[in-house]
Image: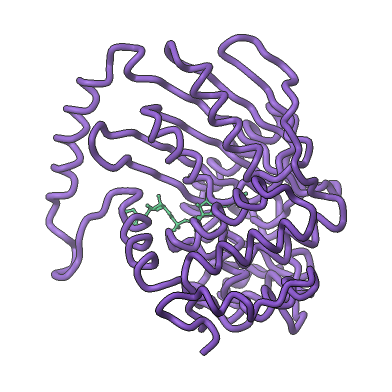
Length: 367
Ligand code: NAD
């Protein structure tokens, strides 16, 4: 494992995307979002995505500095097309639009053809910081990864579902998860020597359950040549038939309704679709009563006796905040394999990753 501080890591990722043709502002947004995912403990959506983003950029499947195009503006409903721009540019613009449109109550924003929007919780946190409740259904057109309940072949993306609930004067509740048992990136992290997968998260074509990440990625020995299309297995949907059903709904709302495209069967360009609902409790006169009841309820939930003597009941969003505080202080751990691939991506963009050693703070990332 390599331990690297937030500042040099953010500078390194920013410099890579700037060298690959993104504006300073966009390169900074991409770096901030990827590093924020690492900070919250979601390494699957962190800086290890950089080589794949760069590859997509070079292939023309991701385009730098795109402005989303408004396809339908029907008042409280807007459909925007992300033009295969970076999700780190398209998603925050769609959240700003949602909050503006929901100023007097509610709004629904549909996004299609966006590049990878990363950790969806970031966008729910952004809405919650503005005082808005938000609900997000997301899918990935072209990403066949997850077997439906009762099947072994891939028919769904990891289709995340996310809700942000603001708490006046306190931290928001942020529920944010992939509808597969684990997000694909967690399998990428395991395949790169990071945290091993729990048992039975994958199903192979013969119906056997496994946690071998190469069942998804095939046998390519090094991280650069690993792709999720080469394995024989599929990720399982969470929660048996219920999670599989929620994933299906994400595909329908974020893929079919937005016209971003559902998972397969054609070889589509990978793109995130997202259908988001924004509610402004203040404008509806419900903010105070909501805050009082929610505070009482959440305190009561947390007061439940822990199942284990040293355990604790946590609210959605709490594990991420704790991890953020810890990693801000200690640095971000990256698996050796993933760090090597990041350095290689930097060198391919004529950036010497060793330069970032000088600003690495109290922990040396190269030891
Ligand atoms: P996960 O399994 O770690 O679940 C995270 C959720 O569970 C969070 O809301 C967290 O606060 C809550 N949680 C975790 N431990 C808890 C505990 N002990 N008590 C109470 N709540 C707890 O997340 P995941 O499914 O691996 O997803 C990881 C990330 O991947 C998410 O941020 C998601 O948005 C992202 N994702 C993005 C895409 C995309 O296409 N952009 C696709 C899939 C997933």
